[in-house]
Image (cartoon, rainbow, N blue to C red; front, side):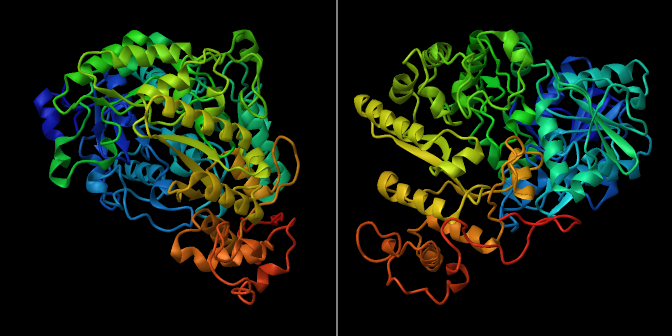
Length: 631
């Protein structure tokens, strides 16, 4: 199987005069199942449609979008595997220096708000040709949302892009249904009932549930909270209702999510004969860096029922775990061993959380009526099956294949689920065979207030798992380490909480974690709602939010207190919290120096009590009527 057409020469080689569908992507074109353009392109091709790809078109040149001509059916537009603003900017709103989804890792190969820009190019070049937007950027901006980078409430991207339809979630079957209907002659404005899609209309559809309007959530915190809660409650495809949100006289209508894929459906999608290479055009530019770590990885499932507040996976892939069969995964693994670049190592087998493979609700009818955002927090659902036996069998089958020397699980695991593995075999097998020296986990924090707001398990689970991991690694005769991910600055996280986390790093990690990030409120997430309003959208309780940029810097510095450049910030943070006992040259000290080293410098924060935390000197929230920071 060759690459999908990317230019006129490719069309001529196939003797094609016109394509049916043209995928426009903010990523470089890599023919690998981890790239949405390749996955969707191969799927639509298997349904008999002629599909081409325009990857990273020059948005300053309208002719760049004309390279393949006009499609017979529609343009499918995506910003790429990441939201373009997340791709471009750090949590401190600074420009990133690299883009691993671009040739040679070069930054600046896509515009800010790529979905909108690409759609505008298409409208200029091909007026009247239908446009369908999708991907993570469109999926998480499908209704009015908070945008961190402009610090404002923005309209649905469906309206800002002037697209005809929006596909949210995993898009294979919704996109196929749209293509099928257009191919039969139906007008794009008449397609209003496809699951997993949004459309706009001038009239409120009968039976739709109205959520607070764009104008309401822009101007009122409580309306934002209600809209967030209602959206999450209508995310189960088996009981979700149609939602409608008014935007300045027009309605954006969200149909219920697409149903989870069956095992045969998922098997088919991942068994296409992908090249697992970037397009040859990129060879002279050192290829595409994002390919290297995943080139010989396997996707075992989709979905995540963890429900972390800051994560978008539940909104995008859904809570239901959609599993591939053992036979399909063995077939794909065998194909990997015949790839000319394969050296014997499968770098990863997993999904959003690797050890959710094979897990499900015991009584599926209970799952079909459930509206909870998480099956694990604050406590595990008693209907959830946590036996990891099927996952263990998968790993055993794959590592026994001829040509497979090493098989790793590197996509991260949900450690609180491992603790509840009723088979008792998963962690010993993992430590013995599938850890390449380091294992990623994501406790995110250890302070109770922070983990509660993040919807993460308590620190006791993390510590218990850490000890078990050490024990089983020792029994396996291996020197292996956990690589924990931590977040600073999340709603509910005070400066004192990060002092507690820094002490945990000092006492239990014995190394400085590199996987630390300042919290970024991603569109439509529960954490974004907390960040804007200072309110938990489900409990209704008020939450402290560290919005002040100075405090965010102090919080992060504490987690990397061994870094010499962070010393002034760490001293200031400790003084502010009244923790001068952690300053000095003694073994428990987090910062070297005298206890009054920064008393004058930190006077602006010293006046705050330990309970209240630093007060925001300057509002950094959305500048709109009715907005006020909640400290």
